[in-house]
Length: 306
Image 1 (spheres, rainbow, N blue to C red):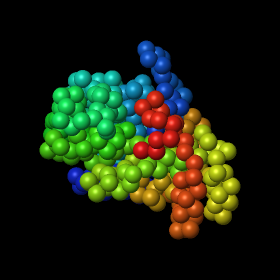
Image 2: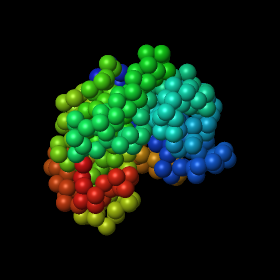
Image 3: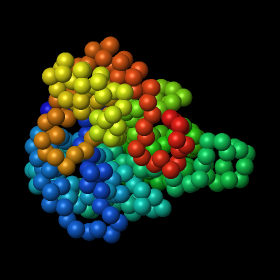
Image 4: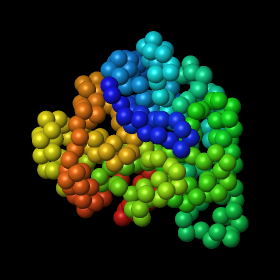
């Protein structure tokens, strides 16, 4: 599989299509049952060339993914493994070491802070208030822990996930090694307002996406139903492949997941097609007429596109 690479600010390169190991496989808290189906699917994906695997301690699937990597007998250097810290945010060093142990790895290629909700930092806070200063200090403290694990060689690159602009600003203000990427929900129905993606790039952060197939699977009756069908037929592919291609051609890393092994070939087709400029623009323009957010909605007002 010819997976294009995106250059990060630290000189490392990230493959632009990743197989996510969460969402569809998410385990309930306390569920320690081994998921053989996930192990088999990841091994199948690796055989098909999916070497970028997106993981998180929150998903509860690290042991399955780690075994799949080991049993694949593919050299470690061919993989790009992303992982994220959430439950272990109070001791990031211990959290990454435990994740590495579970996955039988020595390092992660990219390690992210999964969410910004470990501290109460709101965009409209008085920057001179004690509450703001405490929250900002918390963000900078967590980031210093991330810098230390990169220096220790436990992660090649470090970044964040689900951060809004004020979260990134608080992090950058105290950063010695700035984050290289922000992974966020991104698709035609949530393109992020206030020029957020250009701002991230201006500040040296690349963008990764999750829930990119939302217009096809989670909001199938939205206004893109006809355009996606028409464009997919023109390229002799599927709507899912068109959406992944739209994400990648917008310079964003696409993370997608499935329980169905047959979907893997469908997703890989996205790397074999090139959407025309007018097709890219149509998906963008029509997508902007509709708003649909799938994740962390309790932190946003219904009409908030940030």
